[in-house]
Picture (spheres, rainbow, N blue to C red):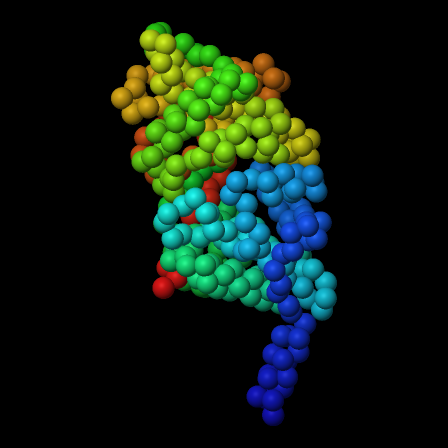
Length: 329
């Protein structure tokens, strides 16, 4: 009798839950509505608009094939994105945007979405699945670990007050810093080459196409205010840094954050104070824009030991993220 009741409950549960593919051009508003609720309490996330979603769909790396929507009794309840990067040679896929609306939690929907996402990655030839979670998101971590995901590294969100900028740390007096001219094709190509060269030793690196660089400069919806700078020695760019301000995030979270988006120095010119010069310049520009804090992400195992530079400049860890991987064979 008990077995009969259990079977009946499982069949009823299966009848209530359906997971279907995202339909580009039809499901954007559904995805946005769930995304905005699920991630609203994350410090560095803010609501997405339909216009921004459509801009994301124009990204060179966008692929709708791995996006799924869970429905409970016909009502949209959760989302997940099993992302395959078409430019990456490595057979690694990424689990992104896994979330379930609060009123539907506790029904096992997140696990079914994750299962669907992993199967999608396998079907498209991926050999490893990668995802991440904030260390304080215990339920999310529990789900990933229950599927066999293992921690492979950590990253940090770091923050520094811009009230005082430590110019006394500046040591390189030969380097000059100039704006990247975004209307200059040669400057954009130089920025793309510098980024690829400076990051080729890093975790998850693969060469960025010039189309991706242009998209990040002109189309990415989060940072309408961006400025990029070259560090120049003997008329040759040897490093770069980018800053951005997400006005919508600041407005929603009642913050005045300015972001260090990316920074890199060519290997022969490291340990010469060039990274310090770029960081100090960036912080001053953000302060001039009335920002109160500079924030950035850093891989804790960054081969250049960048986290030590940020700590020296006065940055403190705001929170940690854990990166997980799961073999799919």
